[in-house]
Figure 1 (cartoon, rainbow, N blue to C red):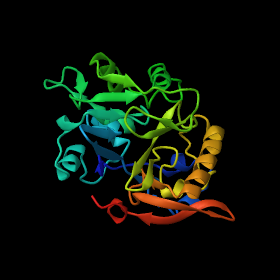
Figure 2: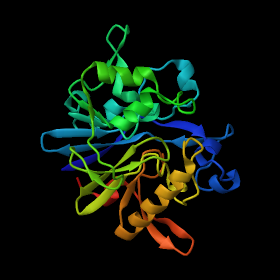
Figure 3: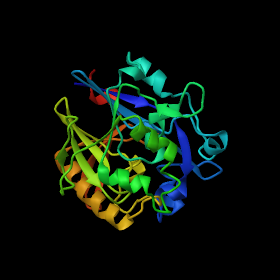
Length: 287
């Protein structure tokens, strides 16, 4: 197995929304805001090369939305999925599996693109299976009013219509299910119904793709929860349990949304679990 970080493109989000009830005077120390109160956000994916499989975890927001849509998110930087794949010698047609932690547009928008004459949509990875889970799919395709703007039909329905959509098998336990794709999955319900966090055994370490449970290193303290979460009290319990296990077992946390930090370890302190060390992917793993 070989793993590669894939940068799909950076953007910005409102700092207050990203930190919920935490005051700006506190969160801006780790996530400084610009004059519009926006903070830097990444859309960092993982590519897993494992035998005949090439698995991409999350796909960013893509580029098919309107200029008006993207104007809300202040995209910045030069990263693209194609250039990042090419850097490691791959093309999007090589991808065999696209695993989506959840179906909010900034995690799955890059899974679907315009067709050649822009009359409709098609899978952006034509040779891949698209993996979610049935409970989350039902949640996303019949959205509540709070999340409706994050679950876009043009990102979802083409997966189903193409015949490429598959569901991860799961039982009634949220922690920790071994998947068909060769890694464990933590199911978490606070941010959205049945978000999936991959736990990957790699080079003697456990690398956890923390997605929106811990969006950035600044979100490590348990009460630092996004305003976007649908069930913040559930997130509170899920984070507390996960962070304690991560600190105890020396997990490596891989950040999807932290534009400036890729990986960290944790430590238990008198104030609870806190950041230990920050690393780049290359610092930790020799590919």
